[in-house]
Length: 114
Image 1 (cartoon, rainbow, N blue to C red):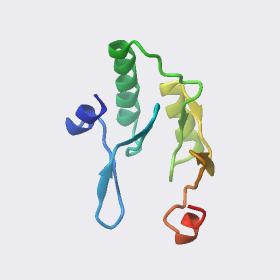
Image 2: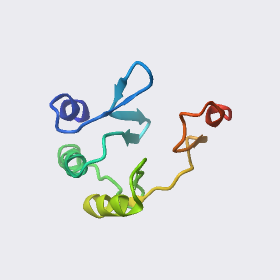
Image 3: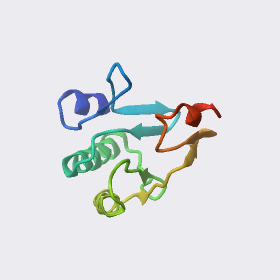
Image 4: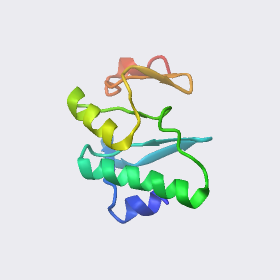
């Protein structure tokens, strides 16, 4: 469902690295990380995607455990989108699957712990 949303332009991904590899979501076990350009329309599309997931799968997204991180945007912008989606504000740095994640992962030294 997520791939179809991205392939049909309903959610705008972001491109990483020199080769501009588009990444819109990463999945591991029962976790999903969505990455996309910062916009109200992306936030709305993400909310709709998650609601469709709930309706079609019968599973429930735990928005109280879900976090939204903004890179290069103001705290006010993050708070506004958090209110749209109904999740929590995420702060850098954080740990995911035991790995430290920072908003400055472009710097080689940030990758040394990995």
